[in-house]
Image (cartoon, rainbow, N blue to C red; front, side, top):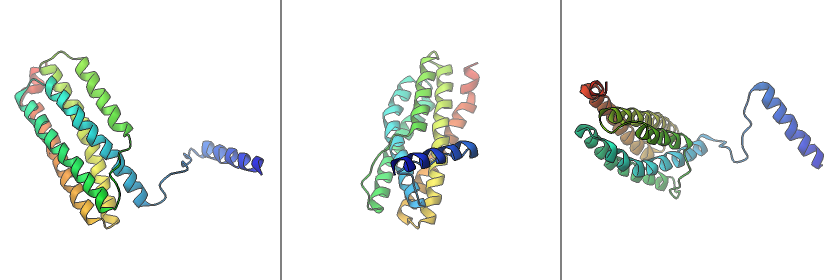
Length: 188
């Protein structure tokens, strides 16, 4: 019997290699609700990591408007964490974070940008670029989560997710405005 299990696993891996399909893990999401909850865990980790990273970005920024935008978003991010906790509660689940590899990569890149730039306009331009990459990831994530919540008829979650999505979009637009209003030109 043991040989059959091994042979079956080998056969499925061979098929996966030939077809280019990725085999699912044992605990893989089977329903949209599973994917939704797993994605909530990822973004919860991401938002908590941002709460730790934003003060470092604020400390390294020199442009007054950029510093103000980072401080504003830091306060919003703390609210985003609370909204996610409310989502978990409305699902009858304990808020749980699962390391988000994408956010970790973006935060690592932001740290590298700060290390590889001199303080001033060039570093500020780099901080904006790194921040917008984070915002775009969050916009994509919250947009997907809102779509899932809508299908799953999770109205409380949907309202929280849409509120956060709107704030992420506003932050992205503000960062673009700051960069376009002379900051990038100063970095030449």
